[in-house]
Image (cartoon, rainbow, N blue to C red; front, side, top):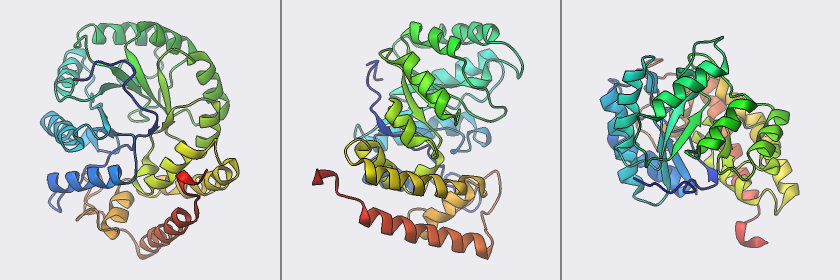
Length: 314
């Protein structure tokens, strides 16, 4: 277990998919292949057991096994973090989180909306979070994930202040999708050790320029290399970064088109996965138009990757 508070590197942290066979069982060989695909793209780390992983459709044993497998496959080449606390009862959450912590992940990520009902105030939320983390292993680095399911709870600036004082949290997957709020959050957390990772493609470049550490969003399951380039080069080649941002923002509409089945289908077409099956949606078949759109996206991505200045060219 990594207990270095500053161990979470800046850059791209894909929200990992869970490969599945056509019968709905987990394809662990496919999971290994997917890890290798992400690493070959240059990502800084992997966010396993999250909403993209279909965590609400996985048993606790499956969530633990996935985290273990990703940690073992990554083998220190990139960081690995995981969440997976899907229960509502605090004792069940402690069990879920403790078992994930035992897998050797670099950070244990708490799902923000699990600690208060919709409409409950920040005082109640902070009280329950404090009770949970007091029962977790002291050595594990923690993170937070503003998961939009089952409801979307954003952290207030007051709660962020409180979180920063705990000196336990190093990662926040930000889903606010607001450039102005991102600038506020970045100013507020500067120097705190809590690093911000934007999940929203349209605001990514502005958030990086505001001080965000990187990207942790679903579109890294389609073209992670482009996100890696932007996170590494945005301040060195600003004109190319502006152009790439336009493309990433426009293509992020694929998030709204039967995700994650379309991402799995995309990776089947790319030869990374063997099946597009999702427990949420079934066999993963898309209409002819949707499949053509994915093929066209793949061609656009390849042209863009070929046209970007090499990282060593400056």
